[in-house]
Length: 242
Image 1 (cartoon, rainbow, N blue to C red):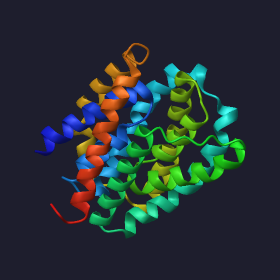
Image 2: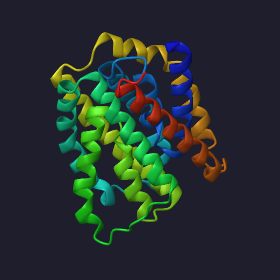
Image 3: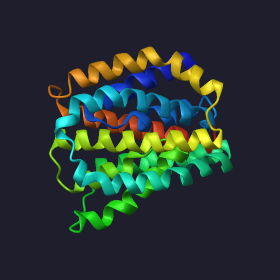
């Protein structure tokens, strides 16, 4: 069950990440967490997204707006240790519930076209980045606050993708340092990362290859449906119904 369901979740999640620059943790984490302790899954996801960020950053390097997103990076780096602390102190079911709520809430807001453009962008960057860092450290779901914020600001798709990839890479490096200092990496996380490695590589390659060709609107609809479904599963599992 773990190999089949987890492998499929990682394949779909990595394809989405290669295609759009985000979405890996939103798809993979809620599903795999229903089968394995979140304290094992979150470090595994962190390993995966950091490794896949390297080639994605290289290909998107010309579109990255580093001078625009550096306050987001600072906020995320500050928030990562706080999230790591939550991963330590919260019990597995509470973590599953948190992961499910974040994934489902993001998918719902994105699917309904929630939009509220922020005029004073720089002022909002630090708290948005901080929230993203906290979520990354506690659940690996750093994406929702930043993705919703960028979508509201009307950033062109390829620039959007590049900025997201660069931001998440910086956030993941800070989270890796925090996890290392907090002793959150374990053998099971590395074993799962290796087991699901082929699905990760194949999905990321295909997604990146078709990033400029696939009908993004259609795939976004499918991906959001998967994220929403996986969020519901994690919520039900974390609440003790399953």
